[in-house]
Length: 326
Image (cartoon, rainbow, N blue to C red; front, side, top):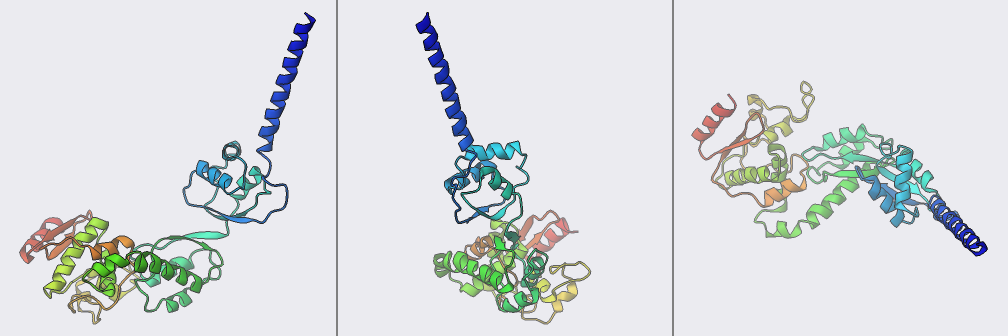
């Protein structure tokens, strides 16, 4: 009997020790990876990234011991909707609680989105509205003179103390990487010059929506150029006229009088492409300019829903106008 009691006592003691070991191990996961003071590292949280992915990345970076513990802390403290996108300076001597809290308290950077088809002035206006105390819109416009079309549209994470020069360099360097280098083979294989491609892409960005629609419009516009017919693209009139106070837009609806505007960018008055881009196109528009859909169509209109309707002859075009716009 005594031996049975001893065995039970030993089992109980062993169970208690095991529970204690498990508890200590679990507790250790809430402690910093390193007790020593360590150098901080930049950790970037992209927009919309799941908490589970953030936890995994923190563990991979050696900033926490266990991704699951991070998720438990976020859930326990109701932080899921408070964690911000941006870059943060974190260290492995911070506990998972401290790291989770740090990710909710501001960021060293700001997310900006350059929209496809914006002109230089629109980009400058948008940047001036951001939390960028060192940014000067006039300096940015001055730096960008002659670079319309070369400011790559994208979403960027930039330091809040970025200057106009730094942002200008970021946009043009990204263009160099993604277009000049990234599409170099396609550009060389094309029968068009790089400037022709970029100018056409800038028009497509304003005249069509979506890659396939851009390819269709590109086919029409390249066809017009081949037969010596004016492009008659309304977007070029909008570029010439510039900012419209009444509509508070750089791309206000053109009027019949605008077709008489004196400018080398007026494609109603001048055959061929404008000399330089009228906006900053995205990658899809550039690819569409390189790879248009070949067509006999010479005309197109957008109906009120944004759908395109094509025509080979002027009579067919006028019928489309009557059917879809009148």
